[in-house]
Image (cartoon, rainbow, N blue to C red; front, side, top):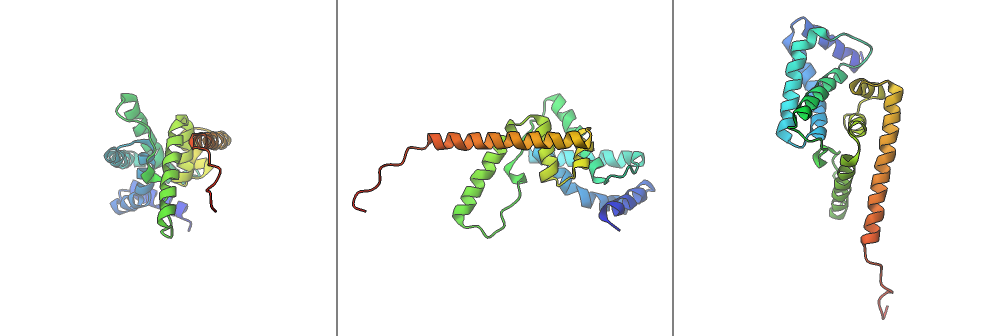
Amino acid sequence: MDLSADNWVLVRAAQRGDASAYALLYDRFATRVQRFARSRVRDRHLAEDVTSETFARALRAINSLEYRGRDAGAWFLTIARNIIFDYTKSGSVRHEVTVDELPDASGHETPEELVILGIARAELIRCLRLLPDDQRTCLVLRFFCDLSVSETARILDREPGAARSLQYRAIHRLGELIGGSANEQRRAQPAPSGGEKGS
């Protein structure tokens, strides 16, 4: 049985009142929901609150969830997205991706490589913040939450083709921003001197 089908078995059990099935759903999706929330809000505690509220709302609405050929995890992320949207409307949250949410280094880097990796992460975060909200959300869902195009489309309330187009535009724009930033940094560096004498 694949994991997606197993998730639906757990959903059906939770709908029948099986608390341990819901606990397993929480175990499977809480990290993904929190990672998504952290990518959208700056405050770690608020991201934890969003995660808790997501699963509280999901529990209250579990009987409304129906199989539609998609993984149940997308449903939890949709709830989280709506909670964040509600916070945003109230003006109590800023959309930001944090450096903590980027994948960790492999552990085999030299100190110099770790410094460069840290600078690259910070630059990626800075450029992600410059993207329009829908593009940033699309990239976070696809590459930080590891969702498929169809799952991302569902959360964004778009058709899969529209989500692919949005992803393409987001990647293209992110590349422009990163490339423009690199060009600015090169222009800001002093020109190399003519070389050292006596070498």
